Length: 203
Image (cartoon, rainbow, N blue to C red; front, top):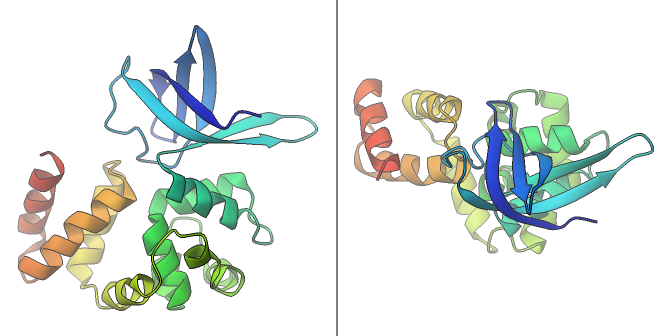
């Protein structure tokens, strides 16, 4: 079983498929959108890896840190959630945001993830409640505060979140910059918010 990869990035696409060259062997890995998104071809990269074995296929799924990996393992324990759908969820939200949404029963946040309808969002809340904090993905008590803040997001902030996700920025990077904008300039026009966010993310 492969649990970790460190090698040079040889290929990647906008759908979250990458190839890592480890000692001359290329490993095809599916990652959440945004993971390795800022890495250039030839860069040395590292991934936590889940090896999914089926009768007809061995597939690798990669993650940027332990929290994302733990969230993935929790997601695939939910009924009718397979590895590809779990990766899709983590393409749309960070582990901390996922934990906050689950603990606060924030269906709206979950359904903003592409491919997650209300029924699936409700299933995630029911089956994951308590499990993500238990895994140490987010400290006890923090999820509630994040969930409350998320529920108060303005339309402009939600639109900005979507725009930054489409530009392949990582969910945790987006969370950080949006928290700063919401605290310091929540009433700016969308274009000004976008410029401020891009400037912060490019530092």
